[in-house]
Image 1 (cartoon, helix red, strand yellow):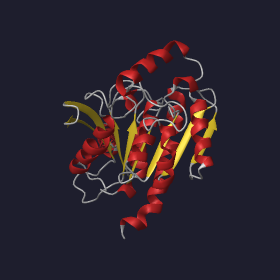
Image 2 (cartoon, one colour; image 1 turned 180 degrees about the vertical axis):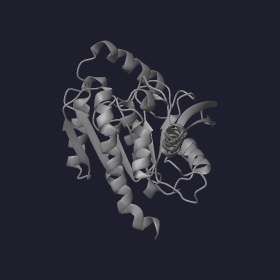
Image 3 (spheres, one colour; image 1 turned 45 degrees about the horizontal axis):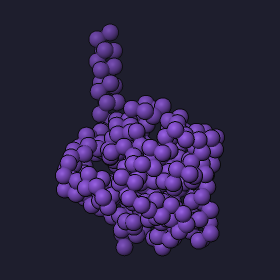
Image 4 (cartoon, helix red, strand yellow; image 1 turned 180 degrees about the horizontal axis):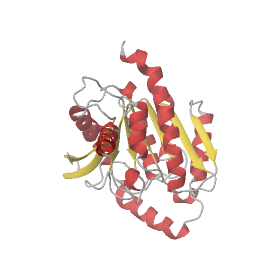
Length: 289
């Protein structure tokens, strides 16, 4: 019995050691004069190893925070399992609600494009064993975070080799959303406060993903877009898909059953990480050039 207890104890210690480790960090943003939290999920057993890993930034949605991808997914330890499986470092930043990850021309407190691209990425690269090369770095996100991922990657091709969107707000124009009429005017009001008057019709504002399709083509970043057919943002995703087809931008586009829910995103994230990992595998030769 004593031997059995010791064996069980060692197994528990071993399984805990082998699980990917999550660190909570706090990064000061000079652009906004405030600190923001994020989590960094590392593959298991990397402490003390002289080895660097690819990194993926996973962005949350409008009502979320830096812990969303840990607390709300429907599969326990999903991020940790993905970090271990693909030997990657995952980063989940936190930003303000309804900020859409852009830099406001009117509000110093809303400079999230700058924060992600010029403050958070350098901080993570300086403090964690990441491969400091765009060919081993990617970004994806859900809803508002999908918008952020596509927009930031389009504007900063020097940082990312792949970008993804799950149920993303590919057009911040609330007229393209299906339903949710009660909240649409609130969103438009907050957009005016942060952006002022912008162009919502074609060729669209650069503050929205559909206004950046030319940059997406020029940059050659691998793109993955998916959305549930019952999602209120489905038309914005179809619109971006059509614009990318029209300007001959290579991209992966998927519609499947589902709505704007954590059930959908729990299923979507492994698909995105698989896609990103395939991009990293193709990029390996470039890392050694």
